[in-house]
Image (cartoon, rainbow, N blue to C red; front, side, top):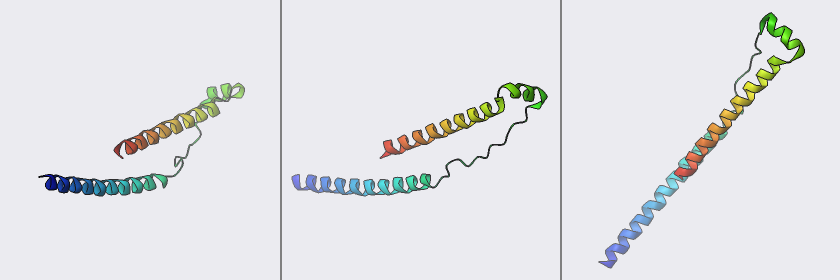
Length: 93
């Protein structure tokens, strides 16, 4: 009975090696595909604020502040999304 247990153990180790190799290959391909994504593909257009916004914008650059705020918020959302996806990939491995 011990010979059968050793054969079964060897088969399980062999299957684990095959599954590990396949998962490594899939995760490498997925990481490579994620690396191909552009850094920031969205083009930001300036916002028209109207006459009141232009008068306020004379003293405070509200349009630039809002543009920078939306850019930072979008980049942070993208960063945390990619980081979360990479954590899922790391947990799978």
